[in-house]
Image (cartoon, rainbow, N blue to C red; front, side, top):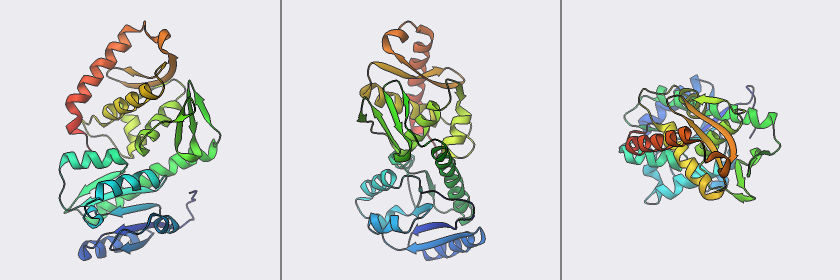
Length: 268
């Protein structure tokens, strides 16, 4: 879904909190956004036909199957930002939602101005991804991996790798870094769309998840290398060539252990 600065931006708001929605819509109008307010979840094809840049959804309106619906939204919306706004939620619930594909999760009570700012942050990030795709729409091949950028898809030896939207964006960012080491702060800024809070281990946790999926899909290759205390580097290497790299391998073990302990502290 390509856009330019002259294209009207649209947000679909799925919420029945009349006071919150009224103020949110006023703030959206002031910021130059079009908006559509719904009090229930529409069929996915109807939602896609609205061509939103972002969807703001209250999971309380999605019924008992709201996890499945959030996962479906995260997987199907592609370049559309998904922001969840809920009355009550635990850290575990927010982490689960983000891993299922939500771009952000905000707890109520919250100021509608913050919601608008978060929507703008996630749509900026998606526009950067779209701009990259427009500049290079052909497949990107690294090791056994093939990135089909126009489809938000990664294949390993011809078979799809089951990545969430955020995992895909993180992996694509690393794959396009030409072997450079990307600091964690830079990765967070470019994938999550805003500055990383001190102590946030989200990047480490997501890299660990991506690694596990790549190991299962392409076991003969090693792709993401840890530079402990700095960040990560993407450089496909056959496993037999990387087996001698003891320092980096030990860093992976340390990073994995830290991420395992810190996983409950992953933030938005």
